[in-house]
Image (cartoon, one colour):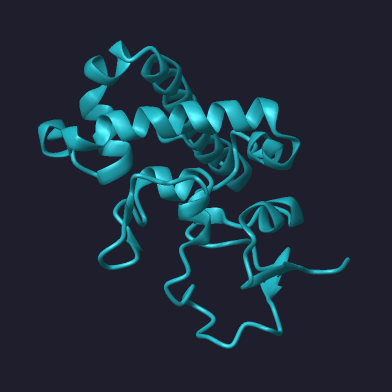
Length: 176
């Protein structure tokens, strides 16, 4: 043996999946701590990194209470609203995405706008009163962040329930 380990492609993929899972697990621990309020202070640099890609948390202190409100709302909806329970179905090892899985969804025939754009539609953000929505420019303040790619926003939609909950006119699930 020459001292260099030869990893197979399967081993490499397993390592990548472990990384994806660890990102989500760390987030979930922070999320639980965040619900206490005190966790927002302790984990502020990590929280702002996940959302804004910046550990200088003091720049984003105006977001802390709105983030907590959103966390409480999402937690309530996940466990109390059957229409919202789809958010619990994301596997820990799912790859980060910046768009939906093209094998599962397609752009609706009724969508008359650019396929790569939501044409300033902000229904999903408005439905949750998302604090990251910049209403002046109708865009997301955390677009393409760690949170965006690893969780719900970057992979929208996950299912027909997801589309229905947010009343999205752009996407529809492909028929099997």
